[in-house]
Image (cartoon, rainbow, N blue to C red; front, side, top):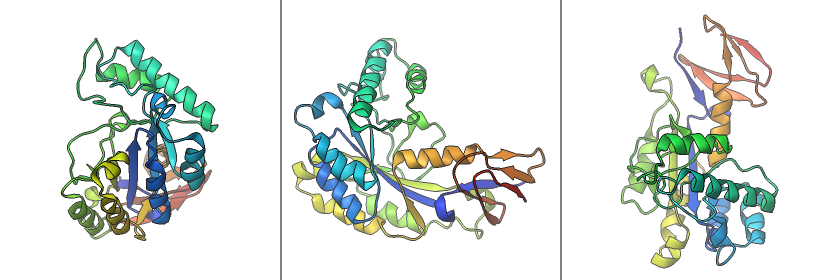
Length: 283
């Protein structure tokens, strides 16, 4: 009977990801910063706004998708899922996903809740109903807002994925230091060796309004190029950890089979392993 935890690609115990909302023209500059520093970002688009004063289709393709970043749903009309009725919520999410997939020729499965998201509820809507229709609409994760903290936890509910903090949080640089200082090696007590994620969110237009682009550049510079960290989009983290969850185990835990197309790293007790697609390991 072993303690077993996933490790990110390359056997890394930590990941960093970013999530920015609304499809703003300033996303171009932000995406270019991410690319410059070897970071990955998810850009959440609300279609109605983008059709008027948002980022253009050509800019999204050139600066976001072609550079390995992600486009995700943010509601066709940017309406809080917890407040609008279930029918309106379904329509807002589905129309956004359909439009984005048609526009960019990609399967889009991620989302960030628009407006107040799932902080308040009205019109007969509950979180359970929102989670159910997102699941049925093929949305596999959705970022919400919550208490900014230094927990760095992997979400236990992907439709309530709380980020670590907003980019302007007063403790962001302190928490980056704490994140890098975490020891997840064999030197610590085994049950505490779960992987960690540093997740930053915001709106790129905030940098223009506050004239503080230096804030995000400092964050990018400080958090980037660490050999112990996997830099990934939201969907890449979700897909990888779901692949890990798909590993099959014998009843005694001594035989491990990987039925996925992913190469998967994990730690079992004090030993690191990697298992290839279709491979069986005998621990």
